[in-house]
Image (tube, rainbow, N blue to C red; front, side):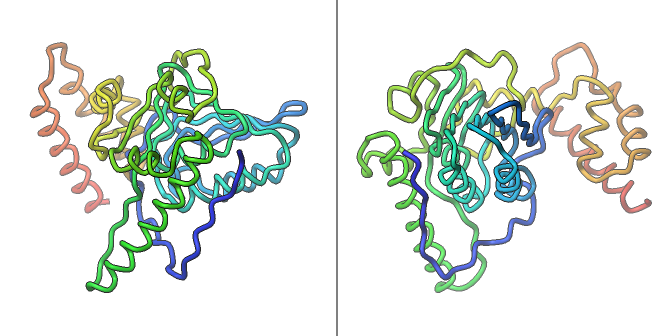
Length: 287
């Protein structure tokens, strides 16, 4: 059921100042049309620093025929998530959503816009209550709390309509930050069918911001902490704002310490990260 999400509020959405999740290899956005169908790939966080509502809107304006939306996203900005959901709900053709790796938080809202939702057995879908940061007095915090309550109510209704569960049950899932594997998502009504397993997730994300991420997904953070080559380390440093020459100097000069054969403890990784951050800051100061 492709219904739009309507939230009536005079409060302006907060401006997103930075990425909510670390940039991941293999992440991004792509739309491609072939014959009478268009495929949109949402493989990044939701929002202006990843996949924005404008990205999707522009692609839908140029789309032809039915739509396949592939999702592997840790979530992000709830307003962009709602806007993308509504854009897909209004699309004139059939919308098939395929969760290939992860549809968490705002990305799960987007997934609910599909006429048909497929999820890989080794993929996950997560729903929770909306978050926000407020700076101000008691009145400012009260306004934000009221807005969050309104958002949660609207999203619980959306999950309820799509799955057939009660609004109260959807709200219960949200309060608990509930993670569903592929089979569980189908059983609970958040997906219509299992798709074949995705052999290689398009992107892996640091999900430490979430309280109950499955162990299999938490391991991604450790995998991300260790670049597999000097070139990968250089890409990370470039994403952090270093110039090409600065990134090369750090990555090739310091990579030997990273590529030791013996296991590296979490404390060693933390210490190394601190040294890299310090060196990066010094390079920026002298640039």
